Image (cartoon, rainbow, N blue to C red; front, side, top):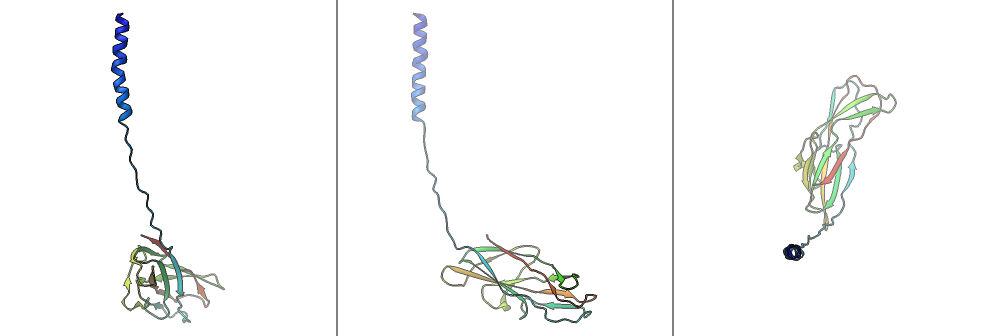
Length: 171
């Protein structure tokens, strides 16, 4: 009898705990949201052109505000911020000789209108953040201009080419 009584006490004590555990479960919901926005595009509007230079004439420079400067157009979701990174210095390779000369990039500039006169300068060694403004509808735009210097001393007569790279991503 004592064993049976102990058994009922143990069972009796464990029943409320089991029943109580069943009622202590709780749940919650988490909201899922997504903001869909226009993808980014980068378009080369103008390649940088040093024109014809004389060998051994020293440094030749094209500034970002010059008519021969390179120009990019970045388009994306209006009002959003983008990070802009450029390649900096570029090796230009002679098409006949294979000789390499260095294009030393100056500080590129950016602005939301199509004229570089009031544009903001940034460092080629770091990225900069710009707002996509202007444009049409929900499309915002940023223009980027770049220039730089080459040294003509000791180079061969040739046509030298290379690629200046710009990378853009939403901030």
